Image (cartoon, rainbow, N blue to C red):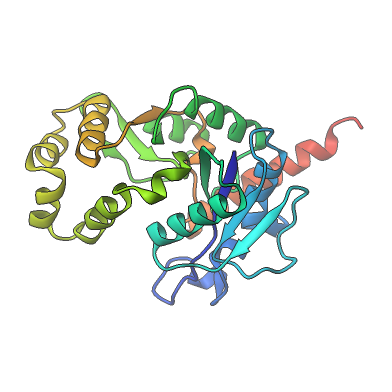
Length: 265
């Protein structure tokens, strides 16, 4: 499959990361010796399941390097617009593409092995969307003090991963417009309820439904075949949104480099 790397976004002065980025793209934030996005590119480049990489939101420069074919396209707007632009570019390059891996540029701890494991897991069944989540226990065991935001359900508390798989042709369906409406209504409970349903919002708020029940209701509402998979890889959800998360990953990746340097050649 091909991969879309979502690398747009420049932190503004009111963003917690502005002191670190100083007006430069978040994806190019130096982290343990290389741009943050390069860590993700390295993982995609080393994964046997990925054939080519489409970078959305960065100029075509020599900043990022990969052995595999890598195409740059400009950002198209918000997150959903960038995803759709990436999928359209994948189809332009490979009209026969069946599945596409969506990766954020701010999950630098992912590895090629993690990418392969999650891609294989997501394509075992014919789904339109496979969304990965990480449990609070898994995240806090791997990255203590990460302070992620969790969705608390009846059976589990989870945070969303930034490494997911979609059927490439979904770009031509009605799902995108439905998702856009949900995103636009996220600050208006009445509008949001009209789209996703009062029952879903209430059951989530009261922690009456399990993760499986929420996934079933969301996919039914969107008229898609989809699933939520709990992944054991906290790295896929450990993104850099705040300075303390940057520091955690700085230490983690520096330790990884040190460990690799000490391995026998």
